[in-house]
Length: 70
Image (cartoon, rainbow, N blue to C red):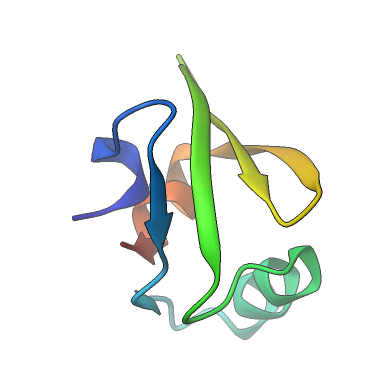
């Protein structure tokens, strides 16, 4: 399941990041979004979703959310 289909408020573990774009992969890694890390969807928005990773909250678009497999 991708992050786009996640239930709000539930904590998930990232299984893998599916992207061929190295820039996107590096960006997600800089946020602390990598395999084995916990992630929580705070809310779904029209253009993406708000997620909580470690001690930070980030607004990510649908393209990034689709690349994160939980």
